Length: 169
Ligand code: S3P
Image (tube, rainbow, N blue to C red; front, side, top):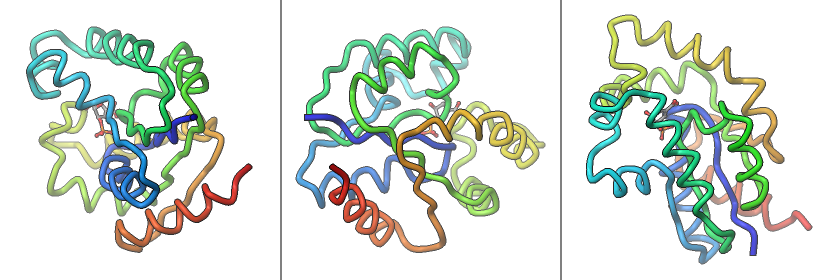
C-alpha cells in the first residue's frame, strides 16, 4: 500500500497533522527528521552544527532510499523537495501532499520553535522564512495534492484531509 507523504515548509504542521492523519486512518506514522536523528543519535541542530547542511541533505536522501512503501503517513523535512533525486523516491513511496500554509501563520508558529530549525536560528529569521518559501514554493507545488491549510486546528485539518484522501481512487 502506498504512503501518504506530507511535504511543506517548516512549521506547516507536517508532523503534528501527520500524526493525527495516521491515527484517524489507522496508518503507521514515520518522519524523515526523526529517522535522521535516530541514525545520528543527535538532534537536527547538532547534525547541522557538526556536519553541515550538505551532509544532512545526503543522509536525508539515503534515508528516503532506504524506505519501502508500507501504507504509512510519512512526514518529511521541509527541504526534502530541493533534490530532484528525492522526488524519484517520494513518487516511488506514494502520494505526495503539500500542506500549503499562509506565511504569516508559519511565522507565528516559528516564534515558538524557530531555534530548533538551524536554517532559522538567525536574527533576520522572519525574512528568511519569506525567502525560503519563495524559493521553494514551485517545488512544493510538484506534489500530487495541494492542501490549503487555514487557521483551523490540527485535528480539523487532519480530519478534512483524511476525508479528501479517502475520496481519491
Ligand atoms: C528543514 C526543515 C526541518 C529539518 C531541517 C531543514 C528545511 O524539518 O529537516 O531543519 O530545510 O526546511 P521541518 O520541516 O520538520 O521543520
